[in-house]
Amino acid sequence: FRAMGLYQAEGNKTKQNYISFVNSEPELLSYFKKVIENKIGINPSLWRLSIKGNIHRKEEIISFWSEKLSVSLDKIYFTCYCSSKKYGIVDLRISNNTIRNLIYRLLKLVRKKCLIEKENCGYFAGAASA
Image (cartoon, rainbow, N blue to C red; front, side, top):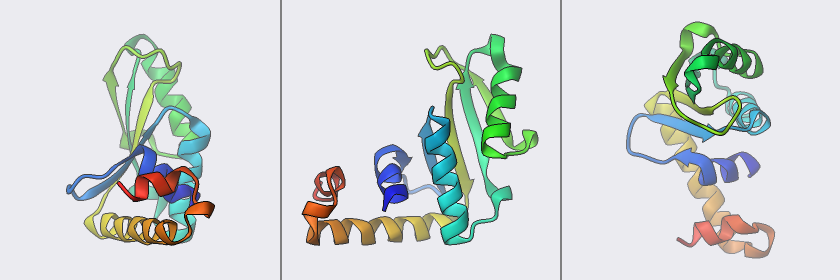
């Protein structure tokens, strides 16, 4: 539920063939990545990172996120962006339509459950009715 709540709040819900979770908090990104890998059985090598950050700290930022999220350097893309975030903003992504469909189905199940049990779902219930 927590991972789907995070995706509801910070995930890109487009009709494209990918899932995308955008955030600047290492703990949230790491948690989301681990849950998706462990609970759904996603191969860790499928993840890509797109980082928006300060060009003057590019190498430091890339190294930071590669280590924190265990993503190889060849799967990290960097874009110059003025951000107040020390390590920029990360778009954690998997380009795979099957995985996207699975995540969307899980999200729908969680929304449905929250409509039935609103008192147990907190803020997610408000988003579920939207």
